[in-house]
Image 1: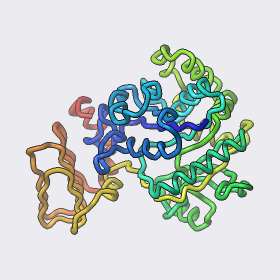
Image 2: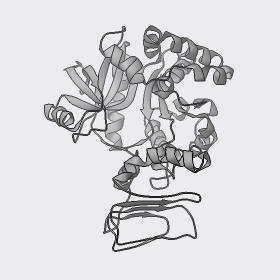
Image 3: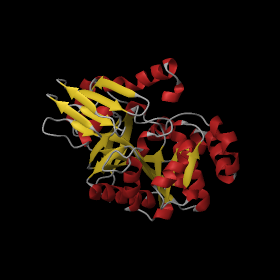
Image 4: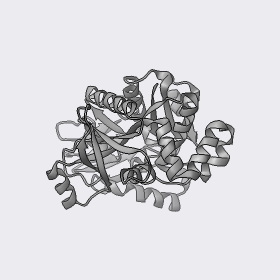
Length: 358
């Protein structure tokens, strides 16, 4: 049967002070009163029934995830005691689902993007599912058709078409985030897609590759699936690495017995990773200002103002392209360009003001 696993780990420090260790980015109700996780879940509902959707998240967030997704059985929430990168967010649920259903085919999806149109997303996933079902050794990755020479994404180098599937192709190689000139060359060639970090595969197939390439991780996730009560003992010993580095890149170079295929995602794909990208997806006024909460602006253009404190008003005058975020215990003031440095700022806040603020 078909399943969906939503990866919803991480804290999203580039959205501090909105996102914290206790309230990660994917649980913030940023989009019309809904969280990014909720939007990802609603996309998954178009693919499989609720009981075949799993969420992998941080253990401290389990209660909040359960409240945001009340439709999910609690057994379908997997809480990581600590972040161990994407390989383990893939390997652990694959081992769990293989025990439940030896024929499980999994769509491994992310929870931190806005994706439109939904019909195109669903159609692409249906093609990827069909490919993984028809070709048991296929590891199918989703490739977003690029609209710009973006330097913030990894790329897939497309190979020959896969007969019988409208957009599927072989993958020659994965490329890391390029510089501006290289990204422009990728775009001009028409041979590259953005690497969406979403996959479809048979649970047993990805576990077979894991056994060949990362045998220690394979043995440990198998033990986790059989003995979930040992989670706190085992999980922290898993090797911390990405699924691209550990599985997808080696398999694309022939290192194991599977092969990598890609299916096109002809969508608008926006990663809400920081305040600049958040400003792009929220409604702005006639001067390009985005205001969420109580705020008054005068002679101001292109600002992002977020105020989460009732009974407190934020005012801006004579400024442009600023980010001002006010919460109960922390306030951020930066430029939209400077917002890229928030992650580094959070580390300094923790060191100088205390970890309680992050």
